[in-house]
Length: 163
Image (tube, rainbow, N blue to C red; front, side, top):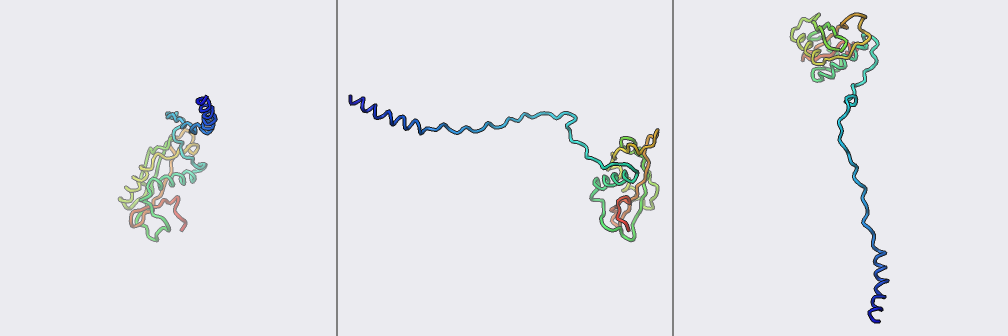
């Protein structure tokens, strides 16, 4: 009988201890990421260009692209009263924006002319001229004017501030 009393006393204690036991908290499962190869259409999208409805629009977009491609060669602010060189380039661009012809139309300074040509080639390909190309023409023809200061840094006439 003594053992029965002893076991009978332990049962409530065991039940009390069992009710205090909590299961360990369950952590949410880590999300599973499966690397995937992007589809060709999901590659980096081309930057959106402003509407190009005229030659002036095209030249502004092109000039901004040239400046972005050559930030260390650009001078900012007012154009100095005496420029070291003025270079006029004539370009022919195909329907894909590739340079077909690049010619110096005006330059008295060969160093500046060489810099201007190199800058134009470095910034290519250019935006597609689209509807600006005349029907049945294979190129879009235009000119750009480089304004050089004494350090042979440039501004483009298209974006230069009004004097």
